[in-house]
Image 1: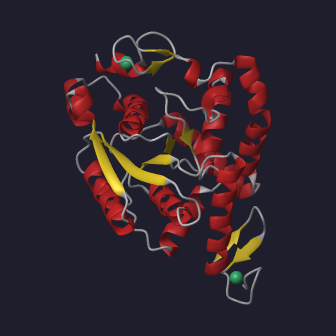
Image 2: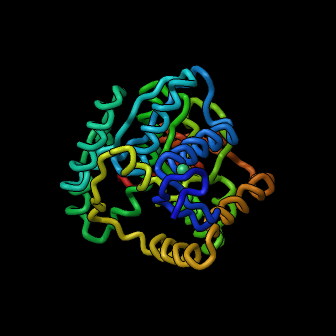
Length: 300
Ligand SMILES: [Zn+2]
Ligand SMILES: [Zn+2]
């Protein structure tokens, strides 16, 4: 099969656009979409100081790489931050990759450990309390610590590697759980705030699969390790369902995310309150929607 845009052999087929692409044209399309997404949502400005949430997984590594590439044309500062929850084996491997990526690209890297903040690693908490599901922790911990870390390194924005699949899943999950108010807060406008560092998702219109292909083409080292505690039952269900739909009806993920983008203003008008309008936690002083924040509740 030939590339839809040149005479070279195609190595990628994109069913949602019926395009066959060679390596060069795939990379070109990928980079163009990355920049377009940033422009579309005014994610970056000259002089920004961006903290990049770098887990060491493929999405965050591609994010780091693409932002680094963009720095050639748009002057902004960048520093990578990694949250070390203290999960033996799993985090050690991804932390290694994160460090190496930053060394290769010459990007400053800071690691924040869960133990510093909570006094315990996630492994210790899991051991001490058999009934508790660390998975419910993880999201809360990471979100809290990334925000705190981004603030500590003086960033005015936090970039995270959420891809199209993640976003489509979250949209659908909120609908299936009948939580429209949460959906309204999901993709918040970029408002600078002292407590809550606004989050940007430059890969939100990039399918997960294409991140993997791009990483491979660009020689970005990947490690296939899954968190040993991962058992997001509901998200797994939605992911499977979405992948099946995408297979049968290509473009489904884009359509879900685009529908959400069409109605998000209306949702926000109805449910109001952005993160910057939230109160603060009386225990730790971080942003919180009501009283003591989730993080402090979990820690105690
Ligand atoms: Zn081509
Ligand atoms: Zn708190």
